[in-house]
Image (cartoon, rainbow, N blue to C red; front, side):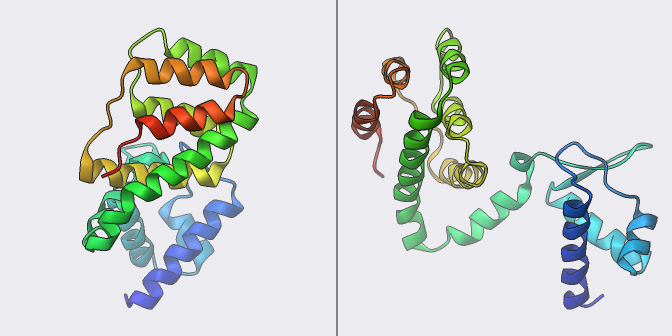
Length: 198
């Protein structure tokens, strides 16, 4: 199978997923049905599905079928990171890019957070809280699907290079106190004071 045909099959598979309204956890059509819908050979479809499975985009459950996986489980993120971050300039820009995205997410979360979001954050504070869990809350409260996906990718890249970020519990307590009255000035100040610049 030529690379052009391979790419076309992957693009058509994506269109089928979109048309069928499939999301993580949903079963995708069988290999035979996909071959019919794509007007392609089963061996070509099988090869494309194997590639998607290798990347962690789909998973095959014996006796059940093939299912879409959660976004964060994709090995594709790590593979892309290895190549993108080979360049010295990309590594230098990574931390700055991450902080800028997180600042935007904090701003949107401050504006869009609901009472339920605030209660969720206060519940998280009853136990030791880590930076990634806190920002998972932030991106959900920001209510921007694409920005959430971008943050997850950049955060994964960052962790692969620098490891996890550790901040004192008081950082999260101060943030929670500022989110309730939507005090953006204080939220931004707290974030600027605690962020590390590599």
